[in-house]
Length: 335
Image 1: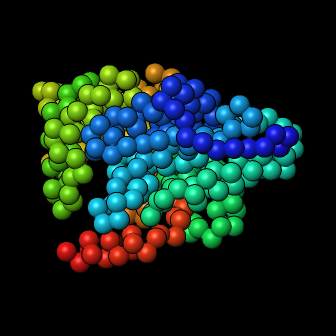
Image 2: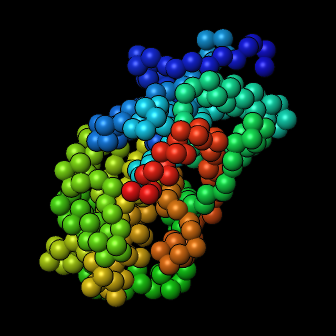
């Protein structure tokens, strides 16, 4: 690259510039938007900063770092958490007919970013990198650990093709839901959603990551910024029997992040019906994709697999933790 690359943290006055950069980049995602991170941090009490990479005065890359604190070491720990599926660098789009030139630019940006991250006093740094960044050599070069992390993405640009890719058994269940007079709603009925979501977690023996009041505030703040939607499936009497929260960014992408269902009505085809109607609604609103968030080899994710999405490989990248953080984690797990 013709001019030297430098890295520095952005000021809050530059966040609008960063938001446009994220929205213009193919590697952009909702989890890198200051608006989204501000909402999440208001709920959790944590903080975030944006580390930018510049070529001269031009912003060419960067990463939004979600920061929490270790009570043992009193040093920042940057890592992903629930409701933060990606913790990924964002790279400028470079049009070129030569892949080698594009790779060279991206490697240089990532190396500049990594060199700055190495200077920061993080005792633990865990990044979840988008599948659209597929050259992890700069991280391997400095001996950071790299692991695959899978998800499914539904391309919504042709809803007819989406229907054809859904397995026949699920299409049959969608049609069963229609025959059973199930209704799809795109609404703001948080109470029904949270009831189903919390009951699902209790049924599975899982611990909720936010209290009801925290979750309600999280939803309300996102709704004010037009960064989420609630999709629900209801009986003819209006009772909600399935619901999920969909995050929506400013760049026509959506992410289904939290779900809940009433097991008593699954035989009506409620889950496939809700998924399909959600795809239809998102496509109608102009969203180009829906990330189903997760693709482990489990019963739930086998259901996702049958929805016909593309299996993608995101990457977990971990900087070797400081010894103080290792001790802290051991003490935490012991108690």
